[in-house]
Length: 366
Image (cartoon, rainbow, N blue to C red; front, top):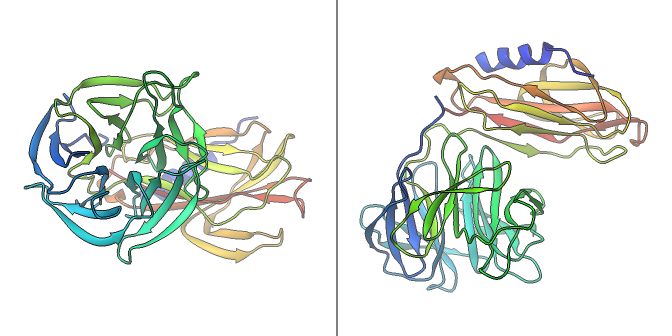
């Protein structure tokens, strides 16, 4: 059964309270060379020498500060001068051999560290330098990270003789991976991933590619011309990045937690979709709480209401769930507007007959 269009109109009204184009990239090689990369052709131009080697990952903050990991200082983070290429120590000790790094929309830094039997995802608070383990990824060949449309992607690298899984998604609350790549994996070795403001994913090492986030398939753009890039990101991040993330805890039902996700980046002038998953194998009734700010209000069902609700429409919910289109007006005034959502549904297997999702925070970008 399909839901009514009432929630669509509701979210459109909340949004009222061309996607960003790719810009020039900057990257680092293992040997310590800093390189400008043209995102339209893939062509690289040397900026200069960093003065340190073993540069294995790189990411740029929303303010344009360039961070890289190096093994020259017993695995630590450095900043890179975008004009000269020179590296400066930050005093931040890395939690190990960092193979990939990415900042989310709030500039929280995620890094993946080489480990056995599983690479491990960590979160680093840059102002304090404190690193916190998130969890094991379940794969051992991760060489790159990037956020695209609010989702953290990684590449499980292959070799000429042994395929890796290719593109995977990583859960930022547990570190666990979900395979996206083609059946049989991939022989491609993507030593870096990055995304533009519209959520287009790029990757490469010796050549630049675009990567389909739905299939994991890579399309070549062109050779970089400077070998062995281990990190690359857009020099000028979007002044108004969009994304989404989960927060809080839900209450599980028959098949686990009901879940809300966004399909496509929340960019003004586009139409992402809200993916609603049920916790039950039978049709149920659900309430979608919609607001502008998170909350933590104890609920009668044993969980928390995670939204300060402005509206709470009731929806029929099939066992298969549904996709709800969310067209966002093309209005620059929506920059960084936040919308928060949570789903409650009937579920006879849940402890008190009600299951609830985690909170979903959507930040609208331009």
